Amino acid sequence: MQQPLTTHRRQEYADSQPYRKQIAPRSIRRPRCLLGASRRGPPVVPQVGRGIRLAASLLSLVQWRKDQLAYNCIDHHVNRGWGGHAALVYANERGERQVFTYSQLKHEVERIAAALRGMGIEKGDRITIYMPISAEAIMLMLATVRIGAIHSVVFAGFGAGALGDRIQASGSRLVFATDITYRAGRDIPLKHIVDASMEIGGESVEHVVVLRRDPGTSMTPERDVDWNDFLAQGAGNDGSHVEMESNEPAYILATSGTTAKPKLVVHAHGGYQVGIHSMGKWCFGLRDTDVWWSTSDIGWVVGHSYIVYAPLLAGATTIAFEGAINHPTPDAIWQITDEFGVTGMFTSPTAVRLLMRYGDEGKPKTKLPSLERVFCAGEVLNPPAWDWLQNEALEDRIPVIDHYWQTETGGPLVGNPYGLAMLPSSPAPAERPCPASKPPS
Picture 1 (cartoon, rainbow, N blue to C red):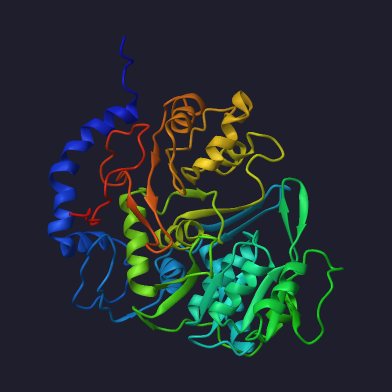
Picture 2 (tube, one colour):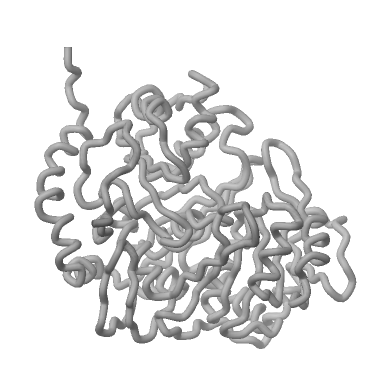
């Protein structure tokens, strides 16, 4: 006998027809109108020029006036009276917790921006960040963009060869590193990898700034700078933002492929933030009252777009977790979800399959009353993994949605437009073009 539809599935069917017949076709025929609708409410871009066009699933051929990604992530919300709202929550598997409001985040980012200027970093300069997820790393990303410099974040699990190649390809003047990271109950050393990478691709590097968690970590004289000494360089320097042309680069990131030399992708202030903010609303339903947790890493584009920039553009609270989601217990991911009242989660099919292997121990022990939706991307969410998470772990109470994108796009291309109209979900891989994403003819 057919099972009765849950509340979220009844809403899926109610919403699907207007989206199929009106919203999706209109987003292709009249992209300017769709972009205008996306900008109602808190502005993403202070001033918009003419010649806006959404084409071939990318925000391409965009002409703008002045813009600033980091300003829109922080200052905009402080100025609208949202400064007391939690912006960034850092947590790790050791139980350490830090919470920063938008006003506090602005203060810390300005402090780091001033320190960067004290180190001689200016608009257009590149820096490499080889750090795990941490409050300092995220603030550093925002501070770099704030002064018009360009960051290149390298996943803190790569070896010396991959790091050296990426430093060399970016032409970075500074490298920022953490001496150790926390993973599955162990302290994983990173500093020796940085030292070795300097021999491979460090020709352009003037200094290595080290966030030391172990005071005994060895430093290379004249080259290495302790994080606290770096911050002291901000004395007498300005931490204000620099207005940017919207087609100027905000960051560069190597594609996730592991073959040959790294291929660097550039994302600019204007089109990138309109894209991730719009897709954040349309595909993920991101709003300023969300507690959002993407379990990815800042070394990947998912971390850039949906740990750091899009949640902050929306005025939401973003969770930055360092460690293994299955440590110290298999259901640690659900314990954190409960602890912080997470409303939206973005995870990977690999993480789902990891939890599956634990059976009942990998399922939540509570009903997770705050959690409204879960999104997956990174590789195909295969039907058994989708079925386990949707029907066994979450008992079909909330939707589990697969979607697809790439480093080059910065945000989703194919998925389910949860924020506009929830279409019927199924174990099939993501297959519907996102709004304004034109499928190949």
